[in-house]
Length: 214
Image (cartoon, rainbow, N blue to C red; front, side):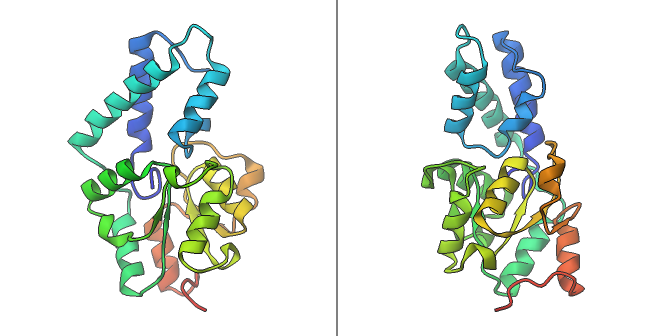
């Protein structure tokens, strides 16, 4: 969802930067990007592992979350081509399930605010799984919701953690890059890379990407 459908990763980065400034605590250089695609509870575990004992990790997270909430109340930016892509899937009756590390309540808030909720009736969220991305559980569950095997599903992902999760589940994976860097080893394992969802839709319409076939 974040970074693929919604252009919210940049918002999140700014909010974490503001939280660090307010708290006087600094994340290790580049560490933020390793958190993209993770659930909140996994982020907290990762922070406890890398930050000094004097760091108030819950307070830092709360500061970032409060800034993020304020930003979301102002606007929820939608990624290029996302709405048209979802509209096409709905029109063609192509089964789809959102697989997001965001917890259910916040995911609903974001999708409704962006006007995308009705296009994604099936969802597996961060509070629905035991193991966050990059573990494959979220994609295994999403496939089960669609009554498919993961190998029969196409996963679209922007983050390295998400790509690793989808690949581990056995999905055919498309990479739509966003904010965070992705290791070359991971990029080399995806089926294709597209600049945005509009390009994915164009490939579907041109018959270069076959989706929804038995």
